[in-house]
Image 1 (cartoon, helix red, strand yellow):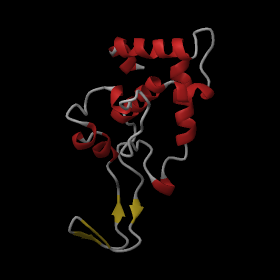
Image 2 (image 1 turned 135 degrees about the vertical axis):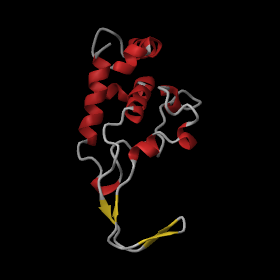
Image 3 (image 1 turned 180 degrees about the vertical axis):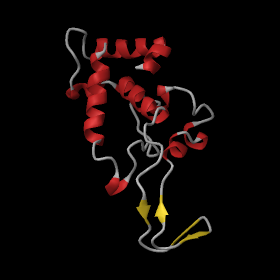
Image 4 (image 1 turned 90 degrees about the vertical axis):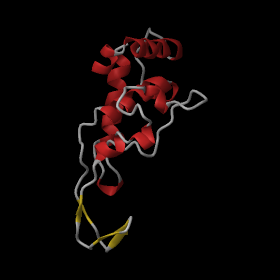
Length: 145
């Protein structure tokens, strides 16, 4: 919500998208999610920049691993730095610290999720609430307009 307040132009774009694709006489539902590309981009950009969990779930290596010339012994605890991935300038560009939802919109105007977008971590031990969180974020933000 704060990003929308600070960026009224983005707020207006979301409003216009909802107005023209869903209408203002009703609240958007999950069936409308695929139609609202820009709103989805805003949600993803917000999660990318304002990630609430900066470190992933600790994991143990099940075998000895060599990564970029470093040997990681079996049984080593590994903790991923999600902030490093979500703010990486190589992936997100030199403006990685700026709020720019367009980075999730492809050249055809479609919503596009990058594989580096991992605010819920990855694998079998990723956030168990990811599905409900995505649903609630969409329903909450779309109903504000």
